[in-house]
Length: 345
Image (cartoon, rainbow, N blue to C red):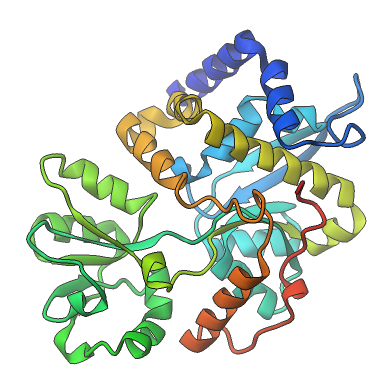
């Protein structure tokens, strides 16, 4: 009840601040053509659904901003944002057409497309996934060899677990010197806090790391991003059911444009984006965690060559990494995975 009340209050506040004015400003920043910049006045809104890979968290802020500031509405849309249980589940429900769109890490999308699930990426919004390691202040993190001689979390349910064999091979890690702890993701924070882990090696900088650091406010944890090692595939993508792409391209275009506008608004006004997400989910997640997640998310957003554009070198690098790791058994042509037809360059 409290969350619903927060959502109603947030929408009312946004309306008072001038929803249309904010939408127009961001739309102008993206240079949207007048023919596709918005819906016809008085036309009924087109309803559709967008599925996340997980429950609400700071990394999804741009989509909530797009809804709360009216960017979806300006595009003639009523988009239902739906929480998920995993990237695999989100890929499956979008693939079956139960949901038209998904906001999912690229790894699960690439796996799904390779398996024949009818999907197409309409926009790449994560430059990298944000996989990272965290360690206690007295446990150095100065490179891959830092894992040797340490107790390290490596959950079989984590993304890093999938690429671990390739990581070991690339960086010549002596696994006999690494004591890996296959802990459930819900248990690993407790293990770390009780000093039964030296390094958490299967977390994300804009999600788990923020939660962990928030629990240890008097200690500055060491952080190593796998992207700094050149070992992190592209991150979150906006994906659509392939049938929707083929039969309703204007719908895909409008959802993609509104998503771009949500991201641009977060980039331009991060404090406002944080405030929106805090009003919606502060009671559940905690205001400091939301602020930390959004702040970290800003470092992961794909802005090159333009916001949301799928970059050929980055995608090729990601496919090579996943192929070498054994996560996928083949590399399809790049246009089997994504299109840039719907992003506003």
